[in-house]
Image (cartoon, rainbow, N blue to C red; front, side, top):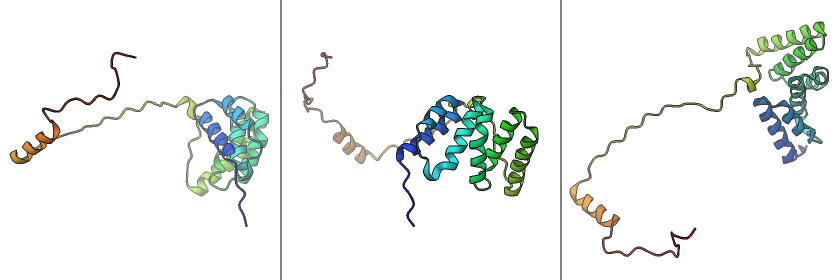
Length: 172
């Protein structure tokens, strides 16, 4: 059985769309996804990204179909996020019974897999600046005098002329 090859352009567009979503830029994510002609074996990921992007721009009714498709295709525990998004879209579309059902499914998946995935959009929490404190201690031990003399002689040759590389420092 031969696995079909996914065009690199498709993979890059899906990754770009995911990045835009993480940055809170769903319109740009949709632009990337609109350029994908055939997601191939990445259809579930494509559907989730498309549905999530549509949801984040407030197009809840349009987001339902791709989110439902992703929820059906993705295995547990990966289907938890599409089900949760689907619940939010149903609720915003005025379909509270379906919203309750989708949210319950997401909770059951979380309980079954014993995980709790973060669902908040990253755009509102994204902070690319991370502060790290590094403490560096450097200690030098003097080399023995004989070794020091040899090292100093090799580093600086007193009578050597500077080499001209044909670069005039006064000319820009």
